[in-house]
Every structure is written in C-alpha cells, then in structure tokens.
Image 1: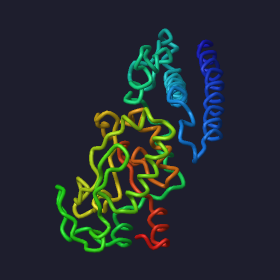
Image 2: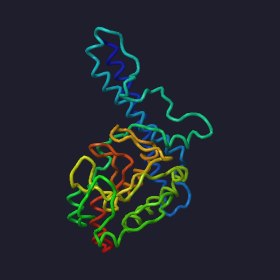
Image 3: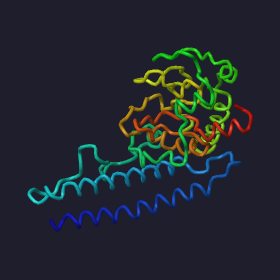
Image 4: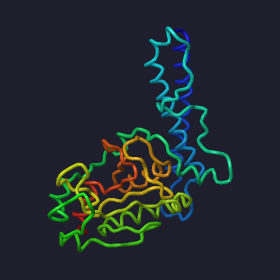
Length: 285
C-alpha cells in the first residue's frame, strides 16, 4: 500500500507545472491581445497547446480521483495501469498528431470540457419565463418542429445575414454582436475562423421533451456552431477543441455557452440576460 501515496504525490507534482505553465500562457495571451490589431495576437499552435494543457490537467485530476477510489482494492491486487474506462485522458496520449495538418486537424478533436459547470460563472441565462416576459411569445402555439415567428415586434427585428463564415437568421442586435465575436476570432485565430460551421439559428419551437416551454432559438437569440460540420454529441461532457476556444470569445461578448447546461449542449451559444437588458437600455431592443 506504500506505493499509493507515492503515486498520488507524483501525480500532484506533475500537475503543479502544468497549471503554472497554462496560467502563464493564458496571462501572456491576454496581455498580447490588441483589439485594434489586424494580425493574430497569438498563433494557432500556441492556443492549441494551451487547450492541450487544460486537457492534461483534467486527465491528471481524473486519475487522482480514480486512484483514491481504488485504494481499498489495491490491498488485494496489483496496482492498475492507466485508466481505460473513459475516466480521464491517458497521460501518454498525444494531444496533437504529427504531420503537416496537425494544427488544423486539432480544432475538430473531441476533448473533455474543463470545469464544465463553471464556464458561465457570472453570466445569467435568460430562461423561457424571462424571455417571454421580456420580449413576448414568438408565436402563440408551439410544437416540436420549427415554425414561423408571428410576434410582430420580434419579426421587425428578425434578419437574415451572412455573419463571418456562416449565414444566420436572428434578431438584428444578436447579429451585430455575433459579427463582433467573429471579427475578433478572424483577427486572432484565422485558421479556426475558416473552420467554423453552423447547425442553425432561428427555430420557433418548444424545448424538446416539454410542453409549451419556448426554446431560446425561437427568439432569434441563439446559434449552434461546430467545426467542419461535425455535430457535437449532446450530453456527453465533451466537445470539439475549436468550440472551447470560441467559447472564450463569446463569453467576452456576453454570450452563454451551452456546455454549462445541466444537459451539456456545447455547440449552443445564446445571448445572456445581461446583454438583453443592456440592449433594452440602449433602445435597440
């Protein structure tokens, strides 16, 4: 049993430099960002390395938890090897494959979502009740299929536009905000910008599995994004690496990331309650 604390201490010591390096890299990234710059503030390879370090830290934490849970069983059997049950990424697993397209291919790689339940800390989700009280119901009767918006005030604000690399149908203030997000992505990480795709924006319907609860997509305030057209698997706690990078840009603009929902939906981004209230104060909503 003496080997158990030794393993735990070793993993703990490995975690410290990873956390330090990730923190220093992120601080450097923030310091280097210039809103007026036209070039990349941090190159794609460095950004991907930062995300890779986050994933390694998550893997270490998962392995520590696994070892703690297995201490009792270690008394009667040999120490287990690296976990193979999905509880964490093996430390010897290469995060980025070697080759000419290694950086570009990494954007579509599926990874664990670090601190998933805290990704929207400080941002308020505008749920169905708030949205209906604040904006009115987008149409009187809702079904499980997408239908036309009938609320005249919302319809006047509803527009179709090419925003960055995608086409959306959303309320005009949301389009303007999304444009700002994509402009920052394009200037900072043009490789990622070129890989962004969408699974849709406006869809006036009730939340699936409910009766009469209005989806945020019904108001033209949400968009589903992905990398290279590969849809995220709903509720598995994982996402594409490119979406974790995009989430930082959306958060800065005041959008909510669906990765933090009780049922993880990481391709989903929606306007926060704070943003809506600010737009009302500005008279644009």
